Length: 212
Image 1 (spheres, rainbow, N blue to C red):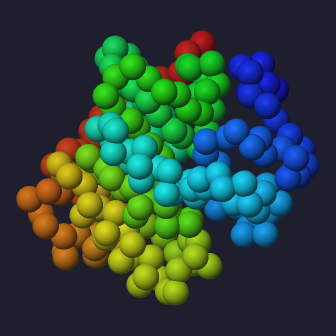
Image 2: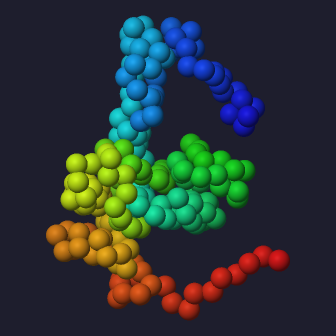
């Protein structure tokens, strides 16, 4: 409904007729199979097709990108960073897996600044295909193993995500599996954070404040 109000054309169900011959580009998500009628039609028409992760690899090169990933907490952490940057007047671009009440329930925006804050999904290995300036890793757990050959493969993918940060990587030092990975990382690029274990940045005297 919101997308329609903003001028987007929404077609249900998928059909070859939905693909306009004059389209420049078709982007498809990991949920779209190779035999999808719209994807097949785009290829038949000679339209450039990119998977979401292929598109993000190109798109993230145009910004100073902060990529947030983790088995748990990435949407919350991404939203918090967007709020901080927004209140600082930096007007960031962002892509997040949830609606932001403080930005009219948007889950994405092309901003005016040079920062992109991106929730980087590990469920289909998208997070190792991007070009981050900074990475933030919240947690690591035995999830989405259907996309990986083993838990070790998942751990290695997180290791690759963390080390591809151009400037530095932030990791949650309280997480058991991230602590294991940390031992094999270039420590000069790692900034730790947490609550329980010693870290470069630790939260203290935490208070939960609610508006009445």
